Image (cartoon, rainbow, N blue to C red; front, top):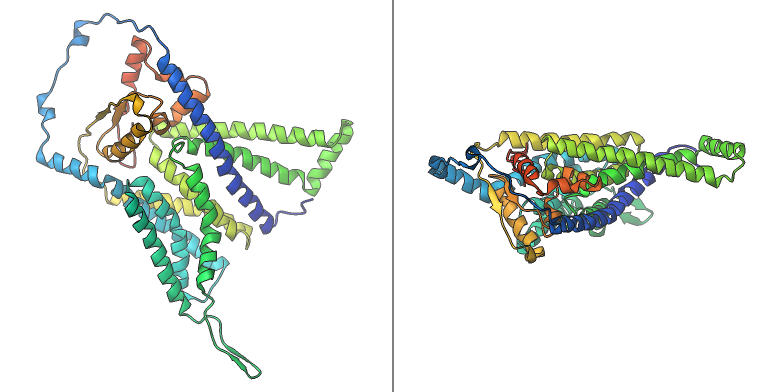
Length: 442
């Protein structure tokens, strides 16, 4: 029976949520994206009986502005710069937000777990909390595997140098015990540095790499919102039910209905799971609406989920000291968002007329289509939108939140061209505007 919500109990609850949510979301995402691909394949194989509609002369007449096909030297240079360096610009923006995020947790950790290692101790904490950025960059920039190794070797090297620096500080004073003289020494050791990093970053790293796998990365934020609401609500009610007052209520209800106590308990958990799943569904709809209104982009969603996974585990270690450290989580996420936004505004590139790209391919390429599309779109979306015909080969990488919700609601077919009206609707709904992060959509 739970007497009270202690910091230790809250830490365990956060650990359960932090681990269970990504695991369940990963399994559910894999299942749903598999079903989504099958639904796309069925929709494509269905013969709609498209009938050519009679057109007027005005509809068949096209005016071509030849001057627009001439790309001046300045625009060509700007496009070339964005094509090659656009992903790195995004990485630079997130670096500012990542530093702000790390500083918030570093300051909180210094208060919750004070040390006497001066500057190197503070830098070690900041470097540990900066680790999510090193996972984010390969998602933002297309790096060859050799540069991957160099990138992560750089992180390890800096961490080792900070450990050597901290190890030179004798923060444990010496003392004499009889004839034995114990000299002053440092509390920092190589194995201690390893244990510290693994304790803080190992679990969220594994969860992030699994739950944000590229195969279902596009739907992961939506599924995580649903599962987080369901699991958090279920755990919260579980803690309430097994408190002293909760047990009394359940026993009283079972006695009044002349039932075994298990049945009211199961009914409570089922109702709770249903209600919070509905809440999660509305959270998914809110995300899809924000995406449709350009308050969010696919990249900002992905980066937000990545840092939120780490922030949850980081906060878990802080609440052991005091439950009020829960406030650090929203504070750190706000610092990430503000830092990234300010960096983006400070380095905003000169606006150029967007250049759209029609991505045509053979559907039989399979996974090679996905790799090719990712390599091209990661660069091209910095200068214009990408148009394509949806197919099973790219369904995992191009599904958008509103399309995924329509799939879950059984309305996926409205996104396919089946007659003249759906063709006109599809042409009218083409998205060619730029997102707040400076990237265009697919």
